[in-house]
Image 1 (spheres, rainbow, N blue to C red):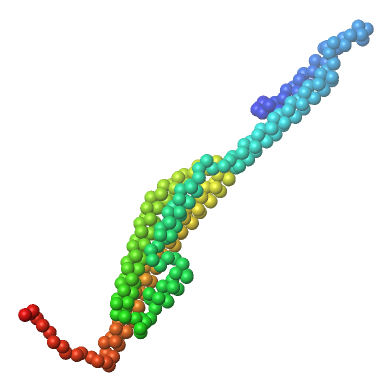
Image 2 (cartoon, helix red, strand yellow):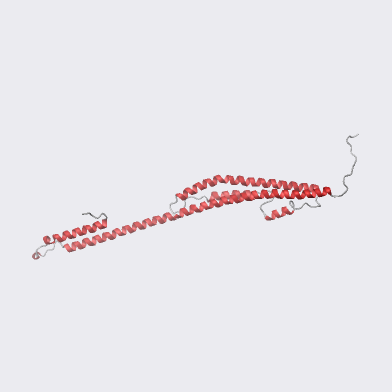
Length: 254
């Protein structure tokens, strides 16, 4: 005959065995009525055993319930645990370095009003009343501005490249934190920081495209202004006027 293994079922099984034994022993334990002594009451004993088994079952149920509640609290604590790692400061520093490089743009800055003023003066149509010296000075200024734009673009490129190593380190750390997260909050925070890293990389890419586009635009504007200046200088050369007038030349001093 197999015996139940768990505690509540085994207790009920023992109660049943004791009840059957108590019933079998009842005639032998009965004392004569004349003695007026009741030493053992089988029915009362069986009832007490049954109540004890039920109380044990209730205690076991309460223990199980408390264990489940404790496990639930542990799970909630893990889900609410904050991620013990933050890459925000390093990402902000990378963005600030790129922003500083953009703010250090030479001559024509990243400003709409500055661009409008430059194209009204330096990159505008060659003035008919400007002297040759003024046209040459404007051409030199445009060339210097183009060179400065190329230098600014290369500086931004160098800054973006220097951020790659920092981004690689932060990416490795964030992926490790995400994979080792103990709860939902830590996993979410790690994911948010990965998105922040992606946003920082997009910022670097935007700055790089802006600096490269600025340098290219300055070079194109310089060529366009040079072409217009060349037409004006050719017009002046071909314009009718006094033309060439011969004069006396002295090669040697007497």
